Length: 84
Image (cartoon, rainbow, N blue to C red; front, side, top):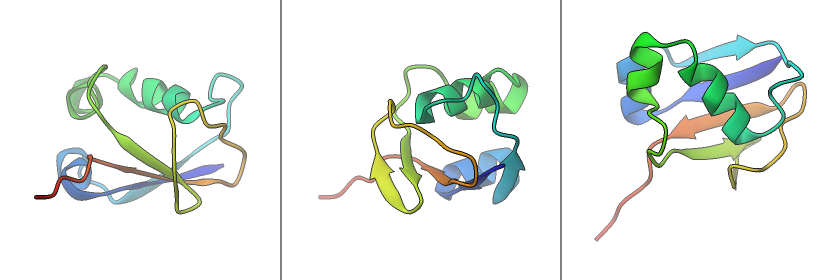
């Protein structure tokens, strides 16, 4: 299982803080996981549109979209942080 934690506006838009999804052959990277979530359609596709910047962390470490995901990983999904 992959535990997904949603933060900030994603938590609000999706109406949940976390969930678990089974590790599947088509979910090999952080970007694959986002594509899997988008494919649910509806609010998922709206909250995580293709081409929108989304930051991901695996086991509390920021990662690039092509970073591998393994069974039992915790994946954090949150909007980019801005500052001034």
